[in-house]
Structure formats: C-alpha cells, structure tokens
Image (tube, rainbow, N blue to C red; front, top):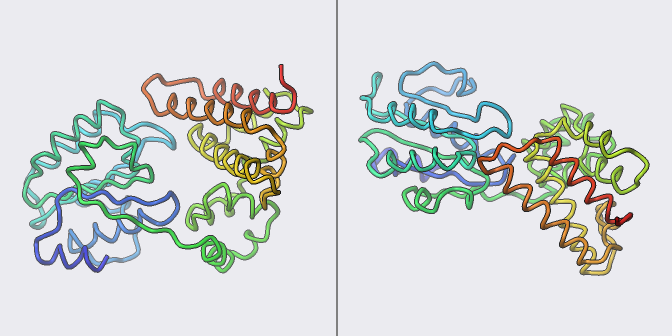
Length: 300
C-alpha cells in the first residue's frame, strides 16, 4: 500500500489496476484503502458501499455468484468520462471482476484503452486467468500474497474463539483455503463444510435429491470450488498412497486415480458451464455432480 500511495502522490499511479489475491485474503480491504486515498477522504470506518460520493462507484455482482453484465459496464463507462465533481479524481472499483460475462468484458476494454485523466479503475479478482488477456495487459497488477494457514487460523481463533472451536472448523478452514476474512464470516454464520454433503453422497444412505437440497445453501460456483478442493486433496492422497489430514481425502485416497480424474473433469466442465452465458439450472448441476460422487463407491 505504501508504494501505491507514493505513486498516487507523485501522479504516477496507473489509471487501470488489477488487485489480485485469493478470496478471503482481504483484497477488498486494499481496494477500500485505495478509494480513500484517491478521493482524499478521512477513513471513519465506514464501508465503502455506504459512502454516497459523486466521484465514486463501488460495483459488486447483484447476487452472490451472479454475473456482471454489460449494462453495469456501460454505466461505469459513462461515469468514467464525466469530470470529477468534488475534486480532481474519481475512482470506480469492480469487485469480482472475473464475474463479467463476455459482452461486459469486451465493453470494459473500450474504457481501459483511453482512461480519462483523473479517473482510476480498480478491478478486484481472485481468478486472474478468468479476465481477458487484453484486459490484464492494460492494467497495473498488484498481487496480494496470502499468509500461512497457521497464521490465518490463529487470527480467526483470536477474533472469535467460541465459534472457531466448533466442530468441523478445521475442514471448513481447509475448504476455504484458510482465507481469514472468509473463514471468520463462515464460522460466525455457522456454515457447514461441503465435505459433509460429499460424504453423504459417498455413503449412499441419503437420496441424492435430499443431499442436493442441503447444497442449495451454497452458490453453485462456491459448491464446485469447495468440492474441487476436497477432490484435489483426495487425488494427492491417492498418488502419494498415504493418508491425508483431511478425512474425506483419506477416503478418496483409496479410490483408483482414473476415477478421481474423471470426476475432476466433470467439475471442471460444470465450472465452465456456470461461468459461461448458458445460465444452467443450479439444482440439476449439483445433483449430477453428487451422483458422480456416489458412483465412486457404487458404479453403475
């Protein structure tokens, strides 16, 4: 942040910036600090979304897991060409910029090609490769490097020791990549690990439809991401031929690697479907994936 502030003070800060880091590692906090510096506002602890300022746009997807569509980018482009009203600068922040669909991303390119003087456009993403290469090439890139898992868990335990002591905390931390901000929110919301659902699918005692009903508490993108993390640990256990610290991974480690690879491919395809423009039925996608998990132990 020190380097960004120095560049801004010297009028050398790039007008298009990508802030990249894993979900839950406080990348949005860096964007927030940059907003206050660009607009020369005193940080009074408010959320940026609560600030009514004519030279600020803080843009997030309409719903968790939703796409950012072209109409939003058109409004951003209109904002970019206007003269700042309360100072000499204005700033637009696009949270989860990788959620832009193809039309929105192409529309943003036109604004990034010739950003107006005094305008700063900040893209926040945890999935850099999901942004168009032409967008990435027009932006200054700042990477937020995550800390260690032990540091993240210690921070959450200090912030909320009661919730962090709950059953399933370690599995939840694993599924969320030990991202402290995301993990703290999850334990306070009493979230359950996705592994519980995957274990139910493998056990074969609960109908898939019923398991999928419980999965509806997650967005489709998050369900797939967390299932893939569990699956990756299982694939590693299978290749290393030794137990994993993750219980589900140890169970998967006894499954032939070829079966796990096919299951991985199914998740990759589902993720591409979710992030495309076809608008799939989330329930059907989850049911299909859960049936594939069940097939690991009870092949058709």
